[in-house]
Length: 384
Image 1: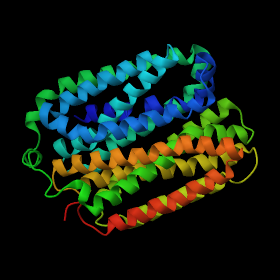
Image 2: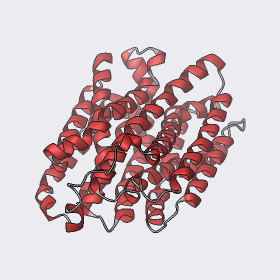
Image 3: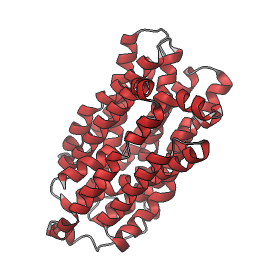
Image 4: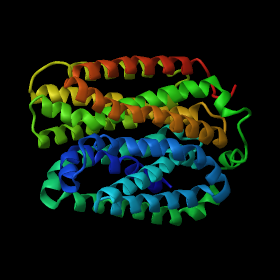
């Protein structure tokens, strides 16, 4: 089960972070219009929005491992077909988004089901895996694509969901051996409508804004660095630095949060990291040192925000059904919020031809995220 968690984490972002550094390559190969490039990040977010609310119902009907395995097959199909044409790129991106949406919702459910007494540690397992492989894929994307082509590089990813699916099927027999404390709660249902809980909306606001910040930064940070005077390969490597800087947070945040009753200090720290990282991008110049500084703080910030979201789904739920219900709602509406970020940044940049105003808006969003987090921290559980 630990191996499965590691492999699930591997698949949760790799197929997305590999894309931004080679957007220009994709555009030239498939003759894509410029306005469509931001959609390659936005489309998966819309898939997260559309698919997430149905994951819990599918889990209850078909079982956690079976739905996980189907999602991995969908993900593999998306990886394979999206390199051949504009139409297949669109379809493949939709499949990738749908597959990852299921993984996003089920990862906390796997932790709650099989490791109810080790939520912090096991959350850090898949989060750490996700972060490390995201860093690798972002950092090597442009250099590898220049050697073997972006199409071949994309299709190599098919190996990972297939391997994960095989491991998932191999662990299916352990599902009956899940801890009794978890089994006892799998049939419970939330004691109220999740959509009517103000705490669920606070969670949705926090989840949505941290996702908006991450995906906007992920999509456009390489271009921001290029506009600052750095090369495409250097910008790709710095995006990898951002992802690599997130690694310590993937390990520390879930464990620290799992041992605390209140999360306000961690939320304040996350907000400050965003302000420092984004603010440093407002400093003009072509210094690689400044780029590294910005990427390190943005790596700390984006991963802290994500991990706070993931651990809160489990910490503020009293049973598996509550975890999946709130996770499905928050990820559905949250990623709808997030989908606005990359494409809005593209439109604003086309209008103003400057990143300064956009970065300022992102700093305001970081403060709004912090506000939702502090409101949520006042409550012990989602359903009270």
